[in-house]
Image (cartoon, rainbow, N blue to C red; front, side, top):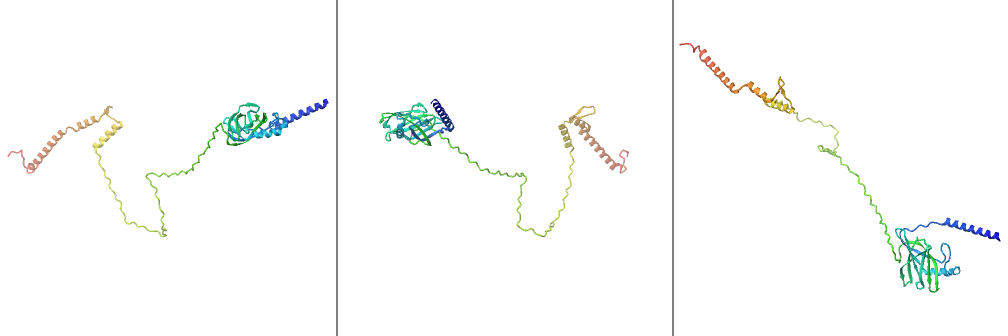
Length: 317
């Protein structure tokens, strides 16, 4: 007996280890939904969807009745809201509210407070919104069922998310990114360069003649021969005064100076004074010229009147 019990314990431990390993291998991480508002499909579970444990007092013997009852109490429509920070809320809808009292909720084993969003008396429904870890969280619901006279415990999961809100009341606002409109590229225009021509030259365009060129060359005879006209160069005598003045101006402009034999600078005024002193006073020259003219005239009179006729004016008669 002792050996049999130990073997059973070993077999059970091996099975537990194998199940744990299989659960670890087959587990796949679930990605959270992106920010937005989604409608989802709610599913009720009389057993825990992960552990398979039935917490309701009905137990295994009441599984069929309990699953049917939870399916009738939970509406298939649900709402999932994810804000920009990743926070997630789930809104579930309960049916048969005239037979249900005081529903309470837990999310992944932790108690949460649910907010009554709306009640539809015509359809006998009520919407409850609660904060969850993600859209894959497991919600535990316990509620008092009036016809049964006791509380019923079941589980809720959501899936099949689709963008939209349906007839639910939403509480978040998701800003949709504006579509980025890329500007259309402008067609590139080829650059036209205009050749620059000199201002004094104008390009001439020659139009080809439509006439066929003649095969016989044409002889051109000059109509008239023009003799070249030769012009004699005109030589102008240089003006002495002008040239001297130009030389003086040029020498003064060039900064040249004249020096005498002793090395003293000779100015233009001293040179002019020397020239005037060498030529003398013009009045004296007029007097001398007059005396010479009178002497010549007297000599001519004496020659023609006396000497040629043989008369001596100095002889006594």
